[in-house]
Structures are given as structure tokens and as C-alpha cells.
Length: 580
Image (cartoon, rainbow, N blue to C red; front, side, top):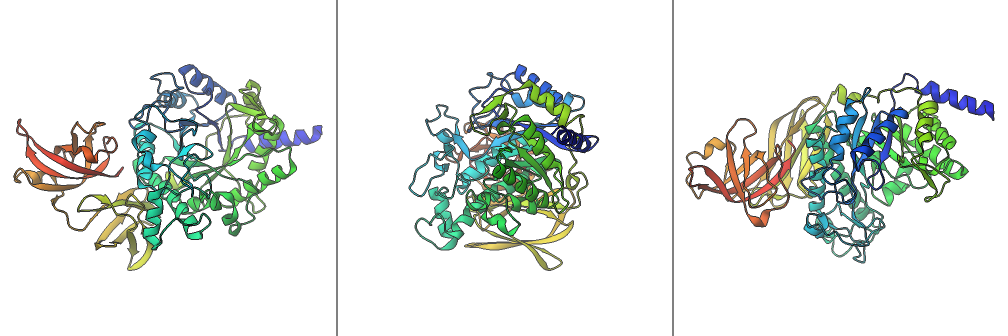
């Protein structure tokens, strides 16, 4: 036995010394971790003791925020006014060596099922129509009330929340959790069902096991991942997008067996496909299994091997459930994660769940909490010295670029759902895309060069452009207005000079120079290049979400001269286009 442990410890140290490796903890917002400055300081001290180089902190739990959000209410269990994300980033980045900070956002769950939020700013009070339902119309899932990704407003709201964090905070990564449905019985939001039926010429409610209906829900989840990824890397090309991912049951035998696993078939989370498409930089499957149970240990081994062999040039990190295991079994799972697969492939690191629950007896309620010895043990036996996280070469030395955009109907700036986007190079069709419920599309990781893009939508005239240039490492934004508008479409604000009051004009794309969080306060919009601006007063009936500085929009309104002689757009309709 002593010889066996000596070999294990020697192997752990040899694999760790001098090599790049991702090492992190999930730090949840329900337990102590970052509710006060003192908790953050303690967290960072423990991370340093364990020789961690990253931390994944839960900034959104159930439609709340542990940072200053313009969209959602402040978390009730946070020290009032304390912006945990800002404080943590400043302290972690100033450490020598520094620690990466990844902002963790719970996606689907928005409130416990035992009550209802009091705060009028909460998503359930502002937009109750975005909730998911099951076949019988019930709305309380196993994780409480949840958003339905088939409702375009859920897509629009969550993407704005996530991208606001990316834009305003110097995070190293954005981390999704619960980016899925809770089971195949869910996803029956009436708007999603209506969209599905309209797309496929159906009526009524589809059967939960209907393959086309299952794929529809799978597509809705993938659409929000793609939308956030494309916009996030447009804002910050080196940002790391990761997710906590489902691994229920035994691991797949091979690629073909993937479709039989719970992630794909039950909760519609095709994370293997996300890696292959390149809309996820780092996969962190939650491989939470009790190592002392031989069957569970086999599940763990099969999942880490599957991940090692299905990274598609991206990064795979083993999510280890230390809360279920003894210290020794956690060390064993680290070793298994570090070892090559039978095909010779390796992961880039490990991440532990959780910072709060450090070891356990294999049962959900049997965990031990905040064991100082655990952090010390990791730093001595598993990670004897600090190493940097591995670089993402496709971000550090990019060879491909991205194309994204939003398609609107010019008549009212409504989203064009299900439009076809065809991308040609040298006369050959290379991608055929379809817009999501918010009119968004994205083609990621295109070879550099010149492309032609053709857009078609039912009931609207087709449109195309001949010369779209894709540049390595950059995102090209190409937005579309299809059909005729009952307004004069202008591209430059200087074109407003000679137009009389009362002229109905359409401006797109424009950037928000000064945002607003109230429908009674005007926006200030400007050209993408130049200093010309115009104030915009929105109609109360179109008010939806705060608009933030730098965001791109389309707006349609009526010109009016104010008492001070300035021009303004009044009675305006506005639509968010994206981050770029």
C-alpha cells in the first residue's frame, strides 16, 4: 500500500511540475465565498495555498446579481452595495502570480419554485411570459422556475445580461451553468410551440419524444450559446467561454453513442457539438462520481476518456466532485484526469466542485466544508508549484475570423425568425445558416477572404452582398433590414440636416453613445464612425431593456426640432442588433 501511494504521489508531482494546466474551483453564490471583502480575501488566500490559477465564481444564481447589474436585482445574501466581481478581479489580477477570474452565470433557473420574487426588477415580474412549461402546462421544474430558450425574449434577455458582464468587467472567462432544459418533458412555452408549429406546418403540442421536437429544443439551447459566444468574442477576442456540462450515467462508448447520453437526449445540451462548431472554448463536464464505488469510478473513467478524445482542438477540463470523495480519492481522480486516454489524448486541467464542500462520503448531504487541510493538501500533493493555465492558441494566434448579424423586417424592426443565410466563397456554398428567434445568425471560424452572403425569408424580398471580408481574429458584423419601410432609411446622421420635421426616418446600424434605463429619458445615438449624435425618445410601448453604451441598434422615429433648436427622433421604435 505504501509503495502504491508513493507511486501515485510521484506521478501527480511529475505531471504537475513545470507544465501549463488549468486549475480552478467552482465558488457558488449560496455559500460563503464572495459576499463580503473578507470572504474574497479568504478565498484568494486558499486558492494561493492550493496553487490554483483560476476561479469560477457564481455571479448569477436565480435571476439575481452579485455585481452591479442594470438588468437584474442585487443578490439578497450579498453585503449591500459590495460588487464582488469588481473587487475579486482587482485583487486576483494584482496577485503575483495572478489568478484568472471566470464569471459563472446560471442560465435556465430564475427562481425557486416555493415562492415568487418581490423585486419588480426581477425577470419573473418583468417578463413572466418567458417561463418554460411542461406538456401539462406546469411551470415549476426540478430547479424551480426557469427560462424557456424557445421564447425569443428569453434569448434576448439572457444574452444581454451575459454580454453586459463581458463589456463592463475585466473577466478572463464567461462560464455557463444550466445551459439546457431540465428534461424532455419541458420546453412547452406557448411561444416556442407556436414557432415550432409554424416552422414545420404542425398544429397542437408535439409529443415529448418526437425527434423533430427534441431537435428543436436542442437547437434553441445551441442558438443562445452561439449568440453569446459570437458577440462576446467580438467584444473581447481572447475571452474564454466555458460551461459546466451534464454527464449523467455512464460515458459514451464513441461519437455515435453520444446521442444516447442524457446531455444530448434528455436535456438538449449538445456540448460535443458546441466544441466541434467552436462555440465553446473550454468544456468542463461535471463528472461527479464517488470513486469508492466501482461502478461510479468506471463512469468517471469513461467520461474523462470521452472528453479527452472529443475536444476538437479546444480545451477539455475534468470537473471533479471533491464533495463526494475522500482526499485520497480526489487525488486519484486528478491522476485519472491527467493520464492520456487509450488513444493518447490529454485534458488541459481540472476544476473542483466545490470550494465550499471539500470532501464527502459519497452522499449528497455527506460533504465536509471549508477544510483548510484540503486546500493545503492540494498545494502539497497534487500541485506542488504554481503553473499558468494553458494558452488557447486559436485565440492567441488566430487564423480564422467570424461573421455575425441580426436580420430585421424594415417595416417595424421586428425579428425575422428562421431566415436563411447562405455564405458563398469562390461561387461555392460553404455554410447555410438559419436565424434564431431574435433574427440572429453567426458563422464562426471562417477562413480569411472575401465572401458573398445571400439572405432569404418567407414573405420578404431576398437580399445579398458581394464582398464581405473576413479577417483572422476579428468579427465582421453584417446586419440586414428586409423589405420596405414606411420611413426614409439613412446611413449617416448628417443626412438629417435638410429633412423637415415630421419626416419618418430609419437609422441603422447606430451605436449607443449614452444609454438609459428608463423609457422617459432619451437615448443618445451616434454613427459608428464620427462624432455626430442625435437624441431619441422611445415610445413607452416599445420599452423593453436598458440600452448600454457601445451597443448597436436600429431605430425608426419621427424628426422633431426641440425648443433649443436641436433635432430629436420622437415616438421611436428601437431594436438591439448586437455588440458590434
